[in-house]
Image (cartoon, rainbow, N blue to C red; front, side):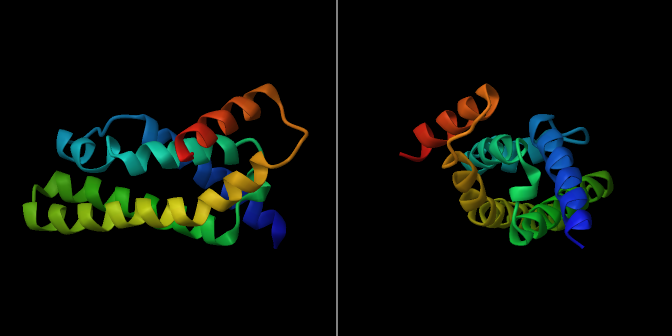
Length: 134
């Protein structure tokens, strides 16, 4: 079961990191709602740390990332339908998903940063995360 959890964590962290880094394809409204938010930046920093050792991502973090990814998909679909009511609700949910993912993944990222044996890439990601949370 642990192998499945790790495989899922790797996939979700990679997919979400890509989706956080790329601009919205369908419409600029998603970008302004969550992509450029402080929460998005914080989550990017945490994911940069977690990508160094995805096995350290807790089940709560993985589940929060799943919810975030699902909501991103719903927003993309709503943008295609151009329903502003659906978009407003979905964007509120997305912002909540970002906050939840930060709450669930942040402790995992900080735990990884507390280790003493770090690669240069991990040390850099941890420095960025630490400087912004101080």
